[in-house]
Image (cartoon, rainbow, N blue to C red; front, side):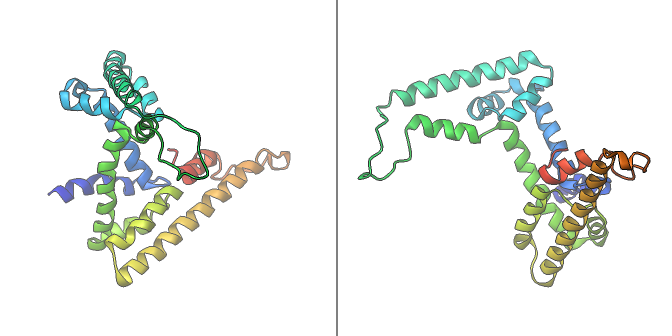
Length: 238
């Protein structure tokens, strides 16, 4: 039953006429994660503990601000800042001192403060919430590809993938498929990526041509939205 629930958003994304079904899935997860963070859940102790400990990346903090729940965000950031101050005070008073590097000493990992801040930069409550489900979606893609002909047809007839999600599918394939099925999947994946990347690239080229006076009276063909589609193909910007 759980597998079927995960299959619904995967099938829905591949049914859409988009440039990358995985971008569609991730965008919906992102919207849901932001809404969850700024919903009633932010008052729950376990959620507040997690947001205080993990904080947010720049991108998702901006999205939380745009959610319009300013009081909720203020409360979340207040507890996060309380923890930051407490932890920095603790680490800065721990006796760890900075010293000039020496050619006779092995390079150390850095102070407790720097290590703590490095870890803080890598964490984001919203990112972590997205990743948990998105990884399950990736596994579901391979499960459906292996078990359902209708999904294999959807996969084959898609418009390919952005570069980042092409890489994820390529890297993940060996963990879910094997033998001839794996070889066929990789070949199909490569064809989908390259053929559709070339298609969008050609649309972008025609978009550029339309700024040349010699092409003023020529039709736009499929080039009017070539720039945002190119941004999605190259950088997963949906």
